[in-house]
Length: 254
Length: 142
Picture 1 (cartoon, each protein chain N blue to C red):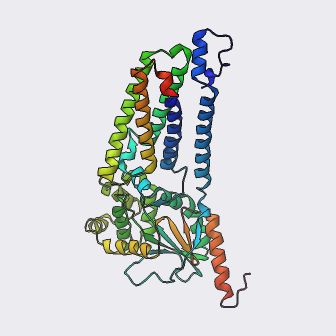
Picture 2 (picture 1 turned 180 degrees about the vertical axis):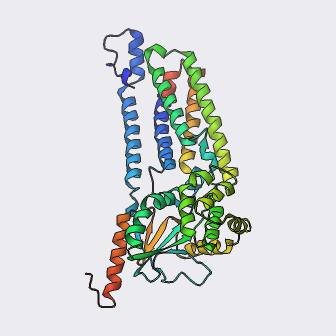
Picture 3 (picture 1 turned 90 degrees about the horizontal axis):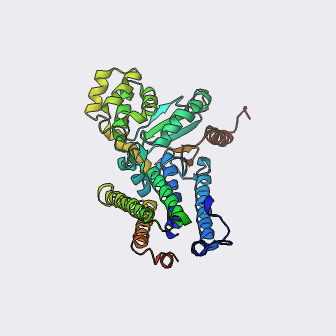
């Protein structure tokens, strides 16, 4: 494009003049317009991607419902605020949250007793190995090591995902080993898909709450979609804690 | 000229799909939806790179050749015109394969992938026209 910006056939032969007339200024204006529209469109899409902006109020029942949906809780069960997460082990955004954001959430919010976190499976249909991963994690829960397995599964997502393999059992087994599980028992549980009903119920719970994407968080009656930041979670926890502290009456921390 | 304009538009469409695929654009989440299904299917990766990234490369090469074709030096080049026909023909075949996968294997349609397929088809038709009727080239381009 750079080399063709010569003045339109000023001192040229007939051939030059003819060629110059075949690519008039209007052509470059059209190219410029296409480029501007393209860059503008990309910029718009990029700015819209700020994950913390997609917050919406959602009427959420306090209890996880009557089905056999059972999440995996981390932290103090009597913590003042409950964080609920719906996630898909094979979703890259969930992996990003689990590996980058969640360590901070654990040390600064969960371990300090500000809130607890409950994880619900929501395996999405396009992630063909996600059901297997959910089963692998549920079987780790049998040995009280769901969260260790959760971390290993997410850290190794690229090893067992749909792109990587058609048969995720091998890499998931390695994850189980790294998580310190008793492998024989884990493998038996995994092979017979022992907890499939629980996983299905957790996914159904997501549908009941209107969760359409992963990860999705519920904190203090509000729904947050996407891999939201530590700051967004801390703010939501603080706000929920403030709200619950006002209602009973006495709170010396504020 | 029409080829250059179409290819430039194609660059941006493919670039969008690539950034989307890489997670640099769009919400940081996974959802059930046609584009998500298509773009996260096993067929969205070809020879180790996202199919959309190959699309960007294809459009950049096509755009470069089309711009070169406007230069005096290559204006009459039959070889360049033939190269564009072959290149865009390959693009059409590849897009047809991807669209077939969308319709009958993945069973989901990604609208920007369809836009890209239409652009490739249009480029191919214009290239064929240019190759067959070099004398009428300027008429066709306007």
